[in-house]
Each structure stands twice: as C-alpha cells, then as structure tokens.
Image 1: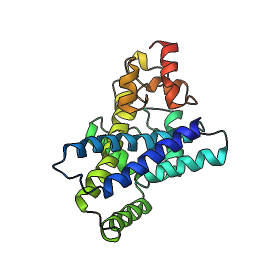
Image 2: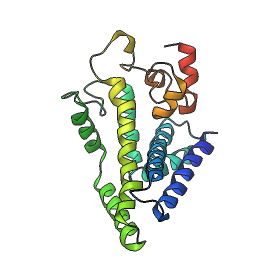
Image 3: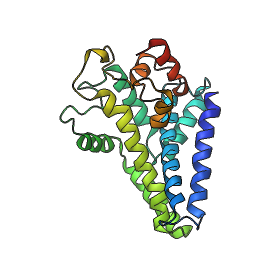
Image 4: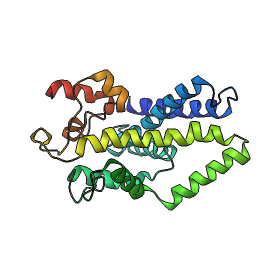
Length: 229
C-alpha cells in the first residue's frame, strides 16, 4: 500500500511537471497557471512526505524498495540528500526541540532565521551542482522559457520547503514549551482532518507522529481520533 501511494505521488508530480513545462498556453497572465502552481507545490510537499515515511521504513516492508522510493522522492525534491535527511531525522526524534536536535534553532525562534538555518543545514554542494545542471538543461537543452522553469519548478520547491517547515517544524516545536507538548516536545493541529490533509498531509498532527512514528502519514488521522487531542 505504502509503495503504491509513494509511487503514485512521484508519478503524479513528474507527469504534472512535464505537462507544465511544455504547455505553452500557460503564461504569467493565465489564471490557471497559478492553480497549477499551487497543485505542483502541494505535490512537491508530497515528495518529501513520501521520503519522510521511507526514513521510518513505512513505505514498504521490502527494505531496498522502501529506501529506493525514499531516495527518488528526496532527489526530486530539489536533489536533497536522503542519507543526510535520514540521519538527522532520527536525531530529531531522539530529542526534539533540544540542543541536539538538528532541526531546532536554539539561537532564534524567528521564523525566517530558523527557516534559513534549516535550509542551510541540509544543502549540499552536490545538490547545488545538480539543480544548476537541471536548470541549464531545461533552459538550453530543452528550450523551456525561464519564466516557466521558475513558476513550475523552482517556486514549487520553495513552496514545499516552506509548507513542510511551517507545519512540520516551526508550529509543532517552537517555544514556549507547554504541558500539552509532553513528552515529545511537540504540538498538534486541532482535530480537523480535511484541513490537516490539505495543509501538510496530516503532518500537522505532529504530536501524534512523534507518539507513533511508524504510523504512515495517511493513517495519522486515526491516531488523532484514538487520542482525541
């Protein structure tokens, strides 16, 4: 089930991207362009959610397939390093919102400062080279206008990063700590399944994720119902 869902998100993201990059009817003055931008941004977020579940081994019980899907999803999400993300994510779960949590900014709770440090921590030179190479391939090799590259490839990556950071790191773990966050140092969205799915694939049910990290993203709503938080 998990592998099929993961492959579906990856395929939908890829086919939609190809459609957007080569559809000359979509321009900056076309209202539907921005609907497609929003959809592609949401699908880009889905890539990371898929990679995240693979880090926890919940995409497939077949180990190589689980990590292969996670690697591909991570690569498509701005050529990020699946290995680095996986290593740091387990550190995050060991001591969330602490000095040893690589996703937590102990020096500043400012959204933009924290987001900047978050992105900087996960960038690699290989990622920069790959992204630059793909950009040049799109523009000079395939003749895709820069406007469409930015609108349908670059901006959705930024959209996905912001969405994941806001709903999956900043809101759940920012200070001050409150009693309802124990013992995981994490908040959770108010129970609203449609909004939880739309906002970040149920990732806003973040206390529930820390409580049951082996629960797949599409089943987190069940944990929410069981715990009634």
